[in-house]
Each structure stands twice: as structure tokens, then as C-alpha cells.
Amino acid sequence: MSKTGISNRVRELRFLNGEMTQAALAQAVGVTRQTVIAIENNKYSPSLEVAFRIAEQFGVSLTEVFQYTAPRARG
Amino acid sequence: MKTFSFRELSALVSAVAVAVAAWLYFPDALTMASHAVGQIGANTDMQLTDSRAMLIRFAIGSVVFLVALQIMFHVALAIFWRRDATEPRDERDRIVALKARRYAYEILAAGVLIAMAYLFSHNLPGVLAAQYLLMTVFASEFVRYALTFVFYRLSV
Image 1 (spheres, helix red, strand yellow):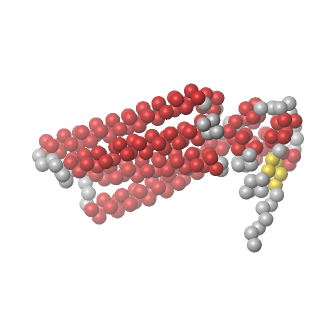
Image 2 (cartoon, chains in turn yellow, blue):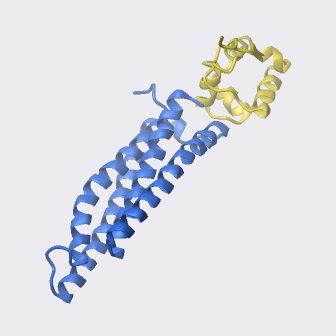
Image 3 (cartoon, helix red, strand yellow):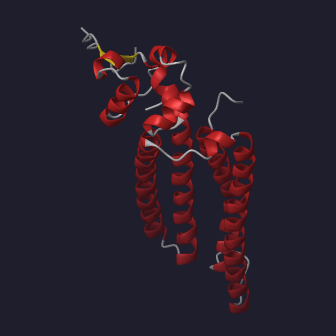
């Protein structure tokens, strides 16, 4: 999980969708392959628009792709 | 090497190119500028005019060298990273560029203010002032490319 508390199942969903390649997903949602890699590694949280496009591509809801867990506040 | 993306390496080689160009340009340019304003060496009007003309030629030559260096580096990168090189920029590229530009702008603004304060306090002429201001432009460009590389590595 990233420091923002957002995690995702993009890699898993790609494999469940006929082992879709990162390049194919990138092209389908209009980002670069490097951005897909960064999203999968939880290094980059995409814009809402791209997040919705990814979910639409896999035919699932947004929350099935992206999950949010509030980071624990430091004492 | 393939662990780096085309855009990461593009930023890195641009930072190196700017650093090399600055390293080659400024030591000689500052000496030439000092000649051009008669602080050292030149004594006659003819010598001063020659020094200014030489400085302008040197500045143009350095810019051409920097552009040629960048083209050479990027052509080499595009050959090895053909797929990445042809991809259009996306939202992450734009965010990285904006963040790097923000810090570069602060360096540029601070550099201009420092250069101006130094120039006024030392009452330096325009030819030298131009060199110090150009130095801040090089510094801010270096910071922009270096931070672009860092932000891509850390992601944003």
C-alpha cells in the first residue's frame, strides 16, 4: 500500500482479463505504460478520470479496483 | 539499464548536458566578459569591441553545442527505448513536469534576485550582468531536469 493509503488490484485484474498486457491497458485508458507500472506498484495514484476508465475497462466498479485505508495517525 | 524509462533517462541526460555546457561555458565566458568591459586585459575601444564580439560568438556556439548534445543523446535514447519514446505524455508526465518546474522557478527567482543584488552592490556592467543572469537560467534548468528524474524515480 502507498503512503496515501490507496492500494489497487490492477495487476490481478489484468491477468483475470485474458492476461492483458500493461501496454494494452495503457493504450485503452490513455496513459503511458510507465504510468500503469507506477499504479500497479502503488507509487502513483491516478486521477479520478483515469481510475474510472481503468474500472470501466475491466467491467467492475471503482472500489473493486482501488481501495482506500486511512493511514493511522501518528501519536 | 532498462529499469529506467525513456523519460527518466531523457531528464537525466538533459541535466548532464546542461551541467556540461555550463561547465564548459561559464569559466571562459566570465573571463571574456571581464575583458569585454575592460576589467582585465583590453585597453582600447577596438579590443573591447573584439572581446564583446568574441563573447557573443562563444555564447551562440555554446547554445548550438548544448542543442547538438541534447539531440545526440535523445536520438541514442529513442533508438533503445523506441516504444516509450513514441508514447504521448500523460497526466503523470504533466504532474512530474509541473512539480519540477515549480522548484526550478524558485531557483530562477532566487538566482535573479541574488544576481541583481550582487550586480547593484558591485556596480557591474551589463555584459557581466547578462552572464550572471544566464548562470541562474542554467542552474534552474539543471534543477528542473534533475528533479524531473528524481520525481519519476520516486513517482509523484
